[in-house]
Image 1: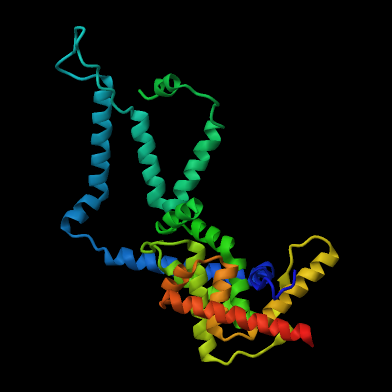
Image 2 (image 1 turned 135 degrees about the vertical axis):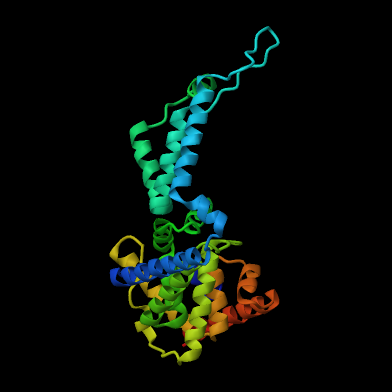
Length: 148
Length: 180
């Protein structure tokens, strides 16, 4: 095929294949990370919390809130007080979140607060290593068995 | 494309790993385009560096409308245009193709592909910058004319004209080389 007959194909096929060098990669990534950190730092500094934010952000309040959530979850898990539905038309008991799920949420939150999205990714990878590969052809019944 | 959306989502939440993966995915293509546009490897590396640093600084606010590849390619083209205005581009001939690799198999095929790439590099260097830019964005980065027009801030007719005149000039240069 003569180049002048299909100049577009000629130019397209001759797309340059270059590779960057290690010094360029290091310089670019180092400077990019620094720029990213600077942006995040500036945003964090700009977001100064007001009084309600400072109160809610305090460690003591957060621990108290976490303890309240765990106590509420445990109480619900052990059963609701008051009405116990009976009879053929009774509604099914509401299934509360398990304490294990509450704990896993708290550990994920801690990882995120400590190391951001990268730390969360690492936590997910560690969890997947423990769980192993997913089972093939799991039924809906089997999936729901572990919900409660 | 879904990979890019996920990586951009993570990048906007401060993930260095996402930024690194985006850089490794597009760095070679972008460097190739920058070299084609500027015909100077050192300048081209500076342009790619500046584009990524600027991109990294937009974490948290970056909003992807088209393709990330197209966005970064346009940034490189814009940055290269600014560099081109600041200094006159030296016509370094075949030296501009320094570092070109070929993924063809075999030594003979590799030599042919490399030689063709060098020829095209030299041909594109003969075009005015605006025409070279549109040809590179359309043919090497597969951007549509509408996308190029929006990115460069010109009308689609302007883009299509530049492209047409660019190809016409390439064709006439090739024809004159063949008839000699």
